[in-house]
Image (cartoon, rainbow, N blue to C red; front, top):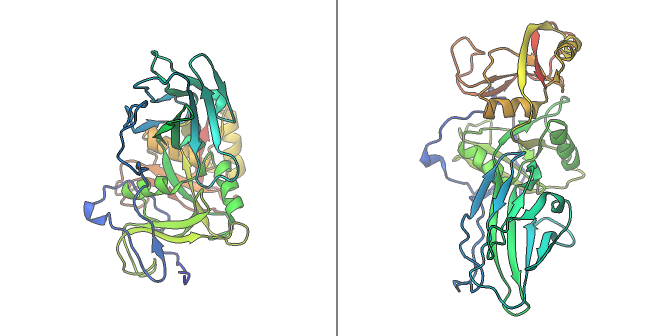
Length: 356
């Protein structure tokens, strides 16, 4: 596949939340790049009705935010004489043994792995094998399998857990396309996020994310979402999620798409004309610290944070969040978190976004 080289464009630093027309939900195929399909939904190969498990489950998708407690439903229609219920997180890219969360029988359960300590069975009634997950984390997003094992007629149902959050593109302070996959993963973690999944990027695209720089995703593939096609960004082709496919995690370099959700604290703005160091001290005097990029995005998304002033963040960038675009507010027409990049830290021009 011939690689497509992207160019910077005016306005590339905007992440919007505008409404898309249904006509835009078209994905692309071309000789110079591929475009991925809509979000994957597992389906049962055969239409055979399950004997023991309620299928479809009560909810095929459960939605929660970081820190929430959720229940993934799994209900027995009938009990075999001897059985176990095994809960597993499905991770197609995982190498090695499957990610078992819990195995239970009619009398007890045993937790496994890093999810086990936060997991329990609901046991609302005798036929209830639903899984409770506490204090959700960003990486909990994905598909979970409830499997009834009796050695004769094993059955399973799959439930999707979606962490409600926001995807944000992130670029190195050294410029465009500087991250290997491992560096991209670390950069997202440093900004209170995790590498976004394809499904999260796809949902963000349907909500208005238009970004002309390609970035890493959690599965090691590289993509970028386009709503408004233009010559400097892949050509005058239809909107879609444009893809470079899998790339060498140790050699190839791109930007990254991070994902974050609600936080336990809050972001606030301190007005002034600070250098970066002065901004740090200003936040400390408030019992806070400079906010991370992910924390500012979370405040914009979940707390409707709207501030028409550029302010320093902990990574040395200057940004401002806008819910209601107006004429004299940066000259930008769309809602979003807008960036001034990484200015000289000695400049005394910006306020500070603090988090506590």
